[in-house]
Length: 463
Image (cartoon, rainbow, N blue to C red):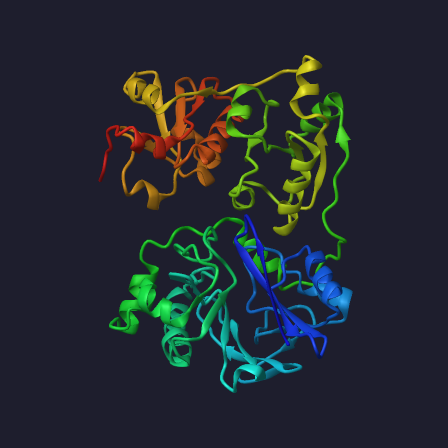
């Protein structure tokens, strides 16, 4: 009997799959995340042996768990052909089959997102001789396709052309009834704008996916796909390298020691230390450890942590509770940020009770921002991505994408009141914390930011 268990990882918006046959008691895991306990538990509960750990491609947005899974279960690691791999795996070719009892997975080479990318056709003998589903990795998503620009080095157009042929020559001829199971859902930066559904069909995508407009030529497809492609998150290039190297075997994320305010302050005084406050933007604004950067523990946390944190530097955490800290550590572990030296015991309560220094941020409503934006001592800073800013901004605002703010501080006047805004206030709080850390004395964040600005029907500058 077919076993089919998707595993969705929030934050990463990543989807892995356990697939197998209950009668044969054998299974494969497709695109496993780094913390593999969930797959081991599934296999234990259903009495399955994990025979294969399958990589559809060399991932850029999370640390793969394939090597850890192989180490724990004896599973064979399966991947496409690439000279980049520096560990032992079985590199499979188009048409090869992995047998899982009455279930089988047939390899389909589907380059485009990456050169080595493979997809997997799912067959179940109880449901006929034709494939019933396709695991598409990062080739095809709901309402989107994989981005072909992550390798850089001028390979974008060549890979986009290969993606065109994977989609139109390999995928669509399989027929509209084929179910589509991608590696990512909405919120991942592995596509331009991935849709909300975590699975689809080829028929649905043929009708509604803007990439599958069959009247486009290959060149027109390439031009369309590469136009306005957002900048890839900073950690993607690092994780591409991590995922081809022999894995550092760890038993999973663990809670680092709670630190007294005095011990925390001493460690935070090290210039190499990264102090990350994971509390809400309003709590951070009300009072925080001097020098801390605010990356709030919401769904966006792991992506912005990848953008903003340096994997070569140790980290200290400030949270509302030990549970929040452990959740943050788990998410950091998934993107290879492992050097967590400790967290502030009892959060800011012990810090303030010890009478240690506090930094604060102003919080401006959009109405206050509108009323004061033309004052000579106020500079308004839009920290959204270039693609977002192209659709309109607060009149007179200066634009610096938050990911590059630390390198462009000389473009701002540290003696003025600097008020930051973004799409929601989330990355604006990151930006405000960077400014405060850099010595800007009068800094404000705008909760609600662009969403609230539009809701209030305030003036918009375009062009």
